[in-house]
Length: 320
Image (cartoon, rainbow, N blue to C red; front, side, top):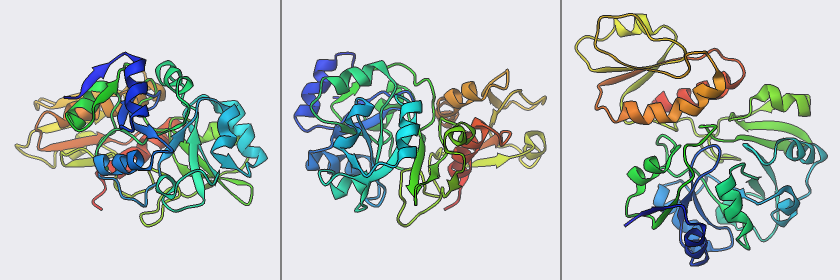
């Protein structure tokens, strides 16, 4: 039986025993294991049903431990780490030889970050190894932002979920790599690219690769509800395309005026992107549980974190 617990020592014991557990972060919950335990790392892929060409993110306790997992670190990467860590920024860097090909999907790089969540930082400081931790959901499904989401996905498939409350950011980390010392965006995330550019100046964007992705989150279809979903510019117009179907609606700032009995969720009454980001997956989980026929999702303004949210939604409704 899967246990949800606040007890750090139970998590330490499970990880030391080579088990996979769920941990909270400021972005989403993750499925975590000792990066030096190859059996446990393989188990993460098996539990998630994750393709083995999709690398994992390594979580370290502080920037001082970066050289334990990475080498040949560009100055701009150090500058980004100093500015954003702990926090929702993942850097893709040349890996140390100690990092297995399973974690890196055969590449010579490793994705790494310092999470900004008191519970997981406490855990990391009490471990003698970093943790590999992709999101705690079956591959392609909506990411989890609370312990109950994880429990619903993996009841009896993992031993332990470390409780950390609701995730404050609600979508995954922004992922930056480096080519010829130039910063490259591999995944939109909880740090808007406008903020990244304040540090990097320029930013190359390569966010899709279904064959040999350099980082997580680059597959065309991802983060998807079970309910048939459409991303639309005009919700009111889209509603008219459907007759007797049970319709759910996810909107950015305000509900639509209609006499139809729709299930309507609003991401942020005030139009705040951070609030919308925090609520995105939680509301998708709720709507997906209502046994609706159709889910209509309003596209957000494509600025700031709106770009990151739209990126998730485009992948969520993709047909392939």
